[in-house]
Length: 430
Ligand code: ASP
Ligand code: MG
Image (tube, rainbow, N blue to C red; front, side, top):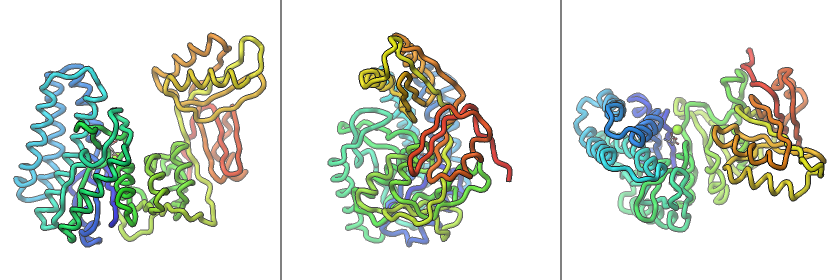
């Protein structure tokens, strides 16, 4: 049994949906668990719908946004098949359900409403693709991920209850394949459910994680993420025209890369796979037979440098007001303040008299941190900071990325170099 994940870009139009069918055909449409995200930028549109419902329910704008959502889906169906009725009949009740939610009174929990509304994107995409494939005679079973993957009620970032989820997934999917060995399963990425049946999402871009949860639960042979890039690259090709594909990387390497901000795979995806030694393939949906990248336990011999640029950072440096040295007591106070404002530390460094942290400059979260710290510390900070992480660095590559900018902080381990610099990296010429 293999798990495939198709992101929003892979089903963004009729040609994309046909291409998904072509890929599945290559695998004989059997013993596959196919995880699909919302079509194109649907999740962003549903976020707008949620905000509008929250702020201006029953407004014209809300109606217009919902019409746009419908048009996006119906126009794909129109282009996809000659007789759209069969697919539209399945989409209509989903839209009606969404409209019922949007015309009901809201609760006082924004995140709950967000998950309830945003989860429709994946229900729509999987309904569309599943029905399309069924009409072509490729028999598949549509399963509701919200009934299989169970989380707590931490809406927008549900924490998975592994015991319950594994049991549900095994029962549902293994059962399906037992009854219909030649079929395949279509289910949603990104969405899950609470014990009492409410919709929950796993965090933006969470479909990769869904694929990993299913693979883990089923002891799948592999997971393949089909993308619009040839595999995992060593840098963002938008900035590095000479970015190269990494043919193989270890789980640890992939975890480190995504931890430092590489956006190729959702960071939570890798641990469950590593735990069961399930390889993860990242492949191009344009070129089915190309090798892509494999992420597994084996460690490749040639370690190519990888570059991760994290913009919009703020570097905060603190000096105790009472002339004491930086000690564990200060650190615990500082960490508590950062933690309670939900910020993540990307790099930190201390000297006898100062402590520096580089954090994401998240609006609304940084200022309260600075305000609280000012009670006991003199606080200096710098905006427009970029954090550069280079894995497997060499001295030649450093100048290339620093581009003469001022380095505020530098940290080196044997494998990783981190540089906090002022200003942003600009595209390299070819
Ligand atoms: N549709 C969701 C999002 O756009 C989940 C995903 O694409 O992985 O964030
Ligand atoms: Mg996506």
